[in-house]
Structure formats: C-alpha cells, structure tokens
Image (cartoon, rainbow, N blue to C red; front, side):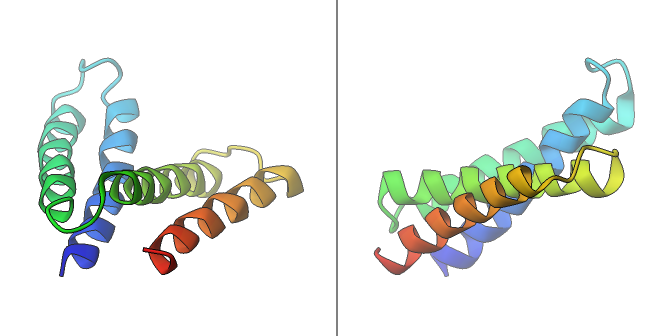
Length: 104
C-alpha cells in the first residue's frame, strides 16, 4: 500500500508544480488553491509512505516521479523542447527510480 500511496504522491507533485507555475506567483486564485491542496496531499502521501519505505528510496522515487511528470507536461502542453538528449535524461531518471524500487 505504501508504494501505491508514494506513486500517487509523486503524481500530485507534478500537479502542484504545474499549478505553481500557473498561479503566476500566487496572483491567480484557482491555481494557487490547487497548488496548496495538492502540495499538502503530496507531502502527506510521502510522509505516510516513508513509514515503511526507507527515506532515501522513498524521497528519490517521489522526486523522480514528480520531475518526470513535470517535464513530460512541459513537453506536451507548454511547448518545451523534445530532444533526444532530454528524452534520454528522462529515461535515465526512470531507470534510477525503477532500480530503487526493485532493489528496495
């Protein structure tokens, strides 16, 4: 169950990162509220998961999911560049996250 919660918390990290950008420095109400709610839920999920998942593994997986999700969102929705080098870096992050899970 902790791994499921950790994955959801990682996805919520992507949501709050996107909402933070969309809030334009907290000058827009709805994205600011989405940011606050998803930040609390994401951190709460991370805290719950780390009751049974080691700190380093849990945090790295959470950050990796959030980073990959945020970059993919930027590529798909914001016109961020899609290059072989960027995709290769994402694959390397994904490999590290999967490796940490498997070696846990």
